[in-house]
Image (cartoon, rainbow, N blue to C red; front, side, top):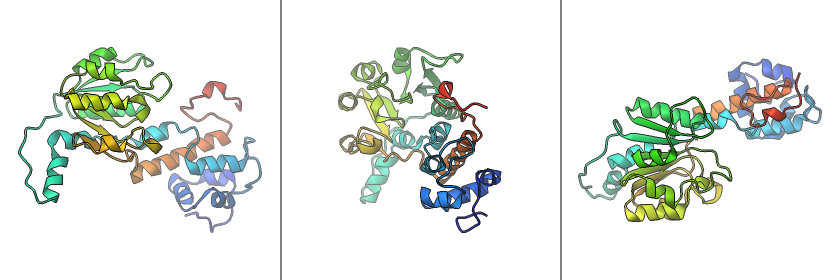
Length: 286
């Protein structure tokens, strides 16, 4: 195993290591400066002309294009929040923790229910797979994806028991789920946001909960700082909230680290990393 105490490695030696050794090197490095000292030439340009300091700082921060690795971080997707809410597990556990016996109430099965997924990127595809595995009817809407079976957004909103927006956060998708969208949802539906708070008009979400249009909401993100759920909404009894931890698992973090290394390797070799959003502008071609 290589660590910062081992002899200095040059770029080629580093990428010749197997994935587990590269991961150990990355994880044993406290910050970018130590990684730079563990690799040859912190002030020199890399083989492709990129300043090594910039390249490795980006690597250790995990932000080299932030592409499929970020999507993979969320592959487990926080399905648990709405599973817990639908079955009443959260409220029952809360009452038991306070020495109270919870009332018995009817739950809802996921099997046979309709799941609406807005956005068919890496995360959306994984949610669709999980939904189908659970025996759910799955509806998809993404105007930028061709060659898949999908329905208009209004149809998805009107027929889904669970609505999950997973569109990319852009100016176009700001407040994508607004008062008008909530009004089209099936009464008694559940809303799950594990993507970005920017997609949701939170005043409209709160109104939909108050009116009973929504039976409940689960959120791992919101409009509080650092994409955290808004405390006012998170405190509601009909909301299950988690503090933006959808991808915070050891396997996900390991995957992100290794994929970031692989992306950096592509840059070093003069190639655009797979999935680069600006690949069309890539200039350092072989």
